[in-house]
Image (cartoon, rainbow, N blue to C red):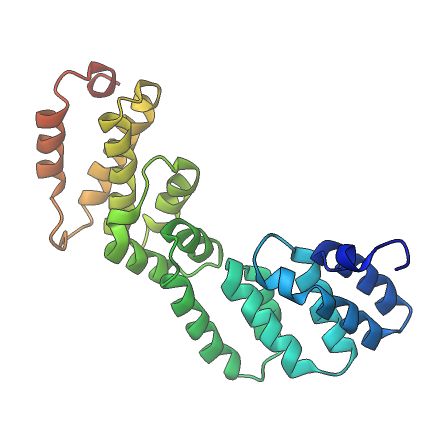
Length: 230
């Protein structure tokens, strides 16, 4: 601790490193004081994962389980961190965890970043929620995020063919609208998948049928032979 000035100890990363050493020496109360000295800097933002982790460990060591649980929930909300949510749910009584999980998935669905929310729901997994998210926030999807959208469509196509179709269309539209010719082959395969999925969709819920979607593509992109001939 003497290696650092008071100003340096207000850095959450330095405070966490000091507090972890104190915790290992069974000086939990001093560890908490050290963390509190950097609390305002942590709350102002930035990426300080060790501060949050060590603080929770210290609260548990002090027997402040409810405070530790609240910190886990806040950590989950702040970054949609599945690890903190699982740790939070694991410590709840039976049946309380089910209610808390539903509450958490609601938080995810309302998250400002639809991509971060979708990634969480696919990985959790909560595919029904993921499909609902797509249906209600499809206009927010960025078809350029194929690293997320491709596995999302794969995960959804069995039980939620319409949601999977909308995800695939987002990538197709981006590729053609932005003339990303290197992706035309992928876009063509996505369109083939949409054709197969259409056979299992009884109601397009106000979205274009597959036939109408293809006709619209032909109208907007008639000369992109790299796509049509792929």
